[in-house]
Length: 321
Picture 1 (cartoon, one colour):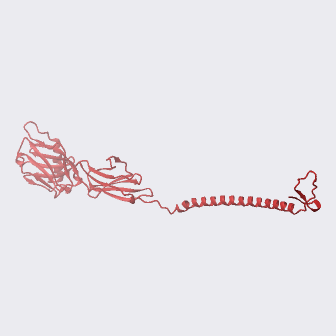
Picture 2 (picture 1 turned 135 degrees about the vertical axis):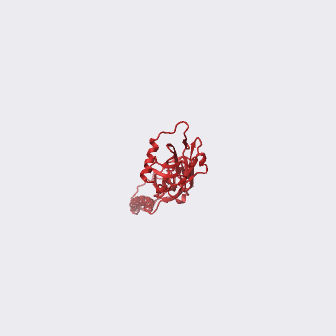
Picture 3 (picture 1 turned 180 degrees about the vertical axis):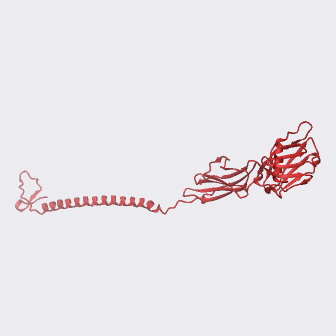
């Protein structure tokens, strides 16, 4: 079938009237179909009421019939117009096709397969279609925590994990399970369409508590966690090389001040001792000079003198008898 004919048929699907009373209707699940990356997705579709669909045309499209995923007609599979990205990965499960029940199996599933799919049944001038949503999810690797010294005050903890889809939720939590604000967070898409996420926090020795890095998939409702308790020995110690001189200078200054005060006190004491020494010498000399002088003449009144007082010759000395 030529490409223009395929697109013309797709256009007719929108222009032809919808089935009325007594005609078939196409039914698909109302809730999204969830498939994991690397595994298989099964997209079910059936006719209501139950109708033999062996001789019908059955086609699967994606993104509003812009991409042909699978085509079945004349009781055979036709892959000549199939989109390249689905070649070799699709299969029509038709064990119950006589009851109007079929399913499209896609294996393996990639992240890019997520989207809206249309199931179309065509019989003569009767056309029926229904849509369903395929959600793709991937559970990534367990989070890994890397420790790296940040500065003299703390260390940097970096939590990373890859292989997630869609964007995972990532949180740092304390020992009580309360979320912590990260210093930075980055997300990037890998070559296979999956997500790599990385988040960092800074921990100081004063704020050292057990931490955990929690990451979860919102579609699969699956979560993984890594716990960490940082030992005090891992924190960088403050270098004392630059502090040696200030620490030594303080007691040295105290010693110098105390020595200066003692020296000043000692000097003043010596000055006072010398001053008193010189004064004492003067007094001693003065006293000695008085002793070496000739005794002066003393006149004693013999009438009133003590009876035992004896006068020496010349009446210059007196003695008591």
